[in-house]
Length: 165
Image (cartoon, rainbow, N blue to C red):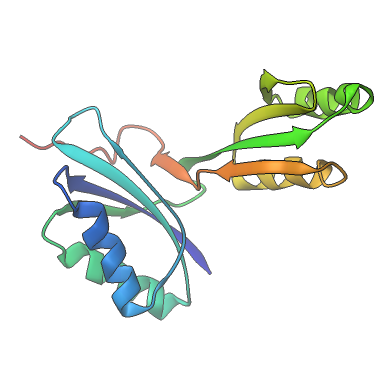
């Protein structure tokens, strides 16, 4: 079972290290973790995707909630949230293969961001299944480099927004 946790934390030095240290000490599995400052520079939003059974996932939520820098923790329900992942892929591509790759890029609304004589660099944003499907279609090509951000997301609408003075 997988769960997406959205943490709003104080933007203090070492906060990400303290949170990831909790996962490490307790032996919790992290599938992905993303972090970035919010519209209010006092706070950072951290999205953690964790795996485990119901007991472990509820334990993660309780333990993270206890951390001093954590202002808020929400579980992002996939039905009630917008979840996205970003991926960049560098593919070996000669002149003959380029048109085939460009066709796949167009179908997925990805973007070619760099073209060299022997390679193409592509960026794609979407949900995990879109990214996985795109990578599966590129399976016959030589992937030279790949960088995936992991999930990030926000809950839908304005009902669950938290304001701090």
